[in-house]
View 1 (tube, rainbow, N blue to C red):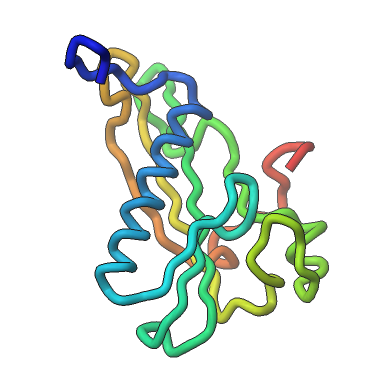
View 2: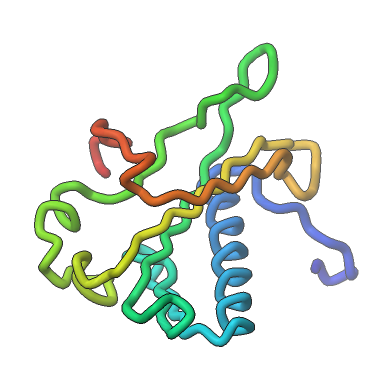
Length: 156
């Protein structure tokens, strides 16, 4: 809240807004995990995974949850079925290529996880709304079901 007790609008810039959504989703999932008696840990900002879950409710082992957020593209006709930019799931030259190695920014080697799950949030930007987000859609999938052979960019 601003000093006068007014709510301030969320940022319009895609990366900043995506970060707010990602952190909010992670907080929600961590709260739910704690309520269910699961062990949950938050990852680092640039590491993998965003959340690590374990406990008897999962049959043992460690489970990785990665959260990704993307803005829905808009055409002259309105929101499209495509995101404004590609979503980066993993870096193929690290985790997938050497799944037995413990990389900086990770809790453990990729192979040590019993499962991997992606939570993808796709939204439409409404710059005239203080909330900024419309039509929030959550997709929960195993990464291998939604991955592409194309890179999201030349840097990721």
